Amino acid sequence: MSRSVAFIGLGHMGAPMAANLVKAGHRVRGYDLVVTPGAGLEPAASARDAVADVDVVISMLPAGRHVLGLYDDILGAARPGTLFVDCSTIDVADARTAHDRAVTAGMRALDAPVSGGVVGAEAATLTFMAGGGGAEFAEARPLLEAMGKKAVHCGGPGAGQAAKICNNMILGVSMIVVSEAFVLGESLGLSHQALYDVASTASGQCWALSVNCPVPGPVPASPANRDYRPGFAASLMAKDLGLAANAARAGGVNAELGMRAAELYAAYAERAGAAEDFSGIVRAIRDRSGE
Ligand code: NAD
Image 1 (tube, rainbow, N blue to C red):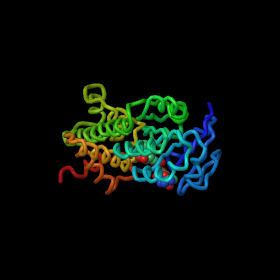
Image 2 (cartoon, rainbow, N blue to C red):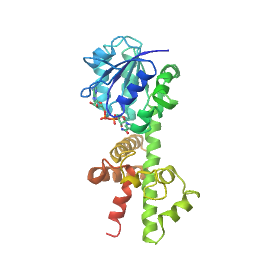
Image 3 (cartoon, helix red, strand yellow):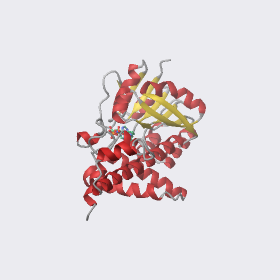
Image 4 (cartoon, rainbow, N blue to C red):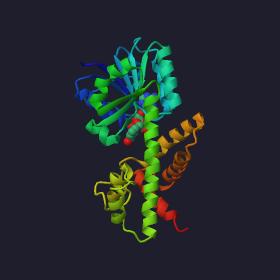
């Protein structure tokens, strides 16, 4: 069924996601503070103009403050009952606040952050993690599937954001320890290939090692083989770990490694690595070793 959609936030992720909705036959009105809507999108004069008279509003913005600011601006301009789907990666608490504000204004809401990066946004192979009601998820599903290959309903409001930051906390910590293991191996005279051959088929196996291997050689497609061009930028990993650390602090959770990973990625992204793939942290670990 063709839907009318307002898509707010046409950056690296939003532009290709909106284009895939158009490709799937939906009518999409686009708005961004900076970016001009691409081919096939109806331009809107403002965010309020974009959301008037549509079935679904999708947003893809940098952070929670942008989403809450947008919702404050547009909730009064949409038709009652409009479904608001926020795909940005934001704080769990902000996602719940956005949901509450939408419902209070007579709308329906879902948080649906993604993994898969710009490549996944362009190829429509993203994974969506959704939080909100079952009926809202069922309604959003055909749109999510036009932009991705998988959509998982994770629970109530904020559950999509929770799943995203928990997953990325596993990923951030595992990338650091895989990198530390390679640098330790180097100091012990162990070749990268030998460590890879053992660990990738033994109990050390994980995505950070066997798909996104942080040293060049063992996995030809990993970013380490192209001077750490992303992939998944270290700045985004730092952001997601920061959100996980906030949530852990707020909930009194003793996530020592997750907290430490957030500090290490923040420092790495601030110094050299913001635009590098997050596996480039192996170089920072190597540089600091032997000091
Ligand atoms: P981006 O900075 O490229 O795009 C964000 C866009 O939002 C910008 O074009 C900006 O002008 C626009 N914007 C900001 N406030 C606005 C407002 N009030 N109204 C209209 N437009 C507004 O960021 P991105 O890489 O597309 O990422 C978007 C979100 O997706 C972030 O939350 C990010 O964490 C998440 N994400 C990104 C990736 C990735 O690989 N880039 C992967 C997964 C998740």
